Image (cartoon, rainbow, N blue to C red):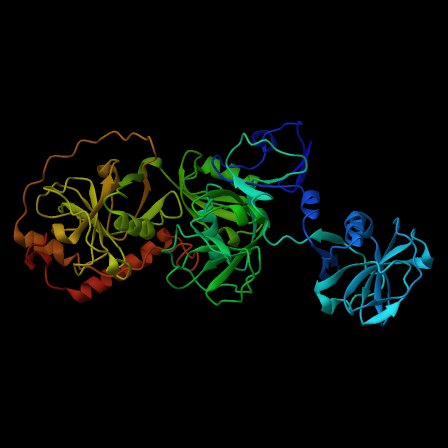
Length: 584
């Protein structure tokens, strides 16, 4: 039997099941699939038809006369014909043959009535007539009335003679469950003429590059979760705490995809099923070109398969060799910097935004040794808010390898700290304080209860009193551990340097590294001198796609900011940390 799968005709067995029909089609296991009865079956039950011409379309609502059935049966012949003539009284479309009986009587027609006319009283030249005024006439049929124009009436006077009827399709605003449904049952038995949609396809809008990147990150595994659903739209709210900018705005038409740029739901991605007016807080990110019916049917809590054009260009986390092949397959050129051997891991990419990369462009990939990327394990169970903060600050929320800038590193200190963002951390409530002891390798963030909120730190020596950022328990939010070799990460590391990190992959085993012997205790004068060098400063998050563009990479900014930080420190010469009570 013949089916229509993702908009294309596909021949399958007489008793085919859904699994056979979608073989070889884009599909994420477990995603919902839209199944719709054949169009011919729906035409028998609908009473409205849309007539499409080059200038627009109008809708005819059928009556219950026998002529309505003649209209249904003649649609295939009417499509492709043209507007034969326009007069003050009528517009005529055709001609085509019918078996209508000839009748020479005069009948009254009202404005916008639709009826059949026989040219020369010959049913081999039948026309569709649309009345433009109330009038009487003899058109060769016994009344011949089959419906009325209900929408698009303004076009009737504007349509020119000779315009071709491009299409006539049934108007189905909402199909019943009997006509269309969403399913995950791959054993479903299909019927002749059914339409199957396995995925949603979106053409991205290059005028909104940051909003497009937000959509690409959410759809990174070709999976779109329907977290919200209303009469107007389906939406995804899984990644809303992001920094966006205002980009292209437009009237939100059916099939449009937008990203909210400001407000309490900033970052939410909307897929519209109804027309809505322009909003300055909705960036136009793209348009659905396939799978609108799937979005209409997918229930809240389900997920659908999604593809985009273009797909995301992200080489971070690949080796230089893999990145070169990937970019070549996309018609792009690679410029290797840093370590350029094939086994080096790409830690940064420039440009980072997909929509800023044009066909044939050169993409810079900065490589480092694999062991220079430290492996972290974040605790989403006990520290969900803090883990989210860290991912946002490092860029791990949108790429496989993140960056952090060293704030203070000293060989005599039992911890190392990294710049955070005081504004972002101003709502970071206390959660998951360390236990009886803060062990070596534990990572934490100073929460909103302390002046240095937002600072990220790693414990280098165990302590029962102070955490990874030098705060006591109530000021430290422990969010995870560094699993890789700390000694390798700390080697030749200075203030202002950039480190690279990634999260432990599922099932990945990291061999533990023996901690070095504890260092001899240092006196208060030495601590005070070290603390003078560690005056804390606020720091904006690393530049990335969701702070207003890719900009310069973190490593390029590190040198300039490092010199500025030293000048500021020299000016402050603040009170030594060691003199603050209960502060390491």
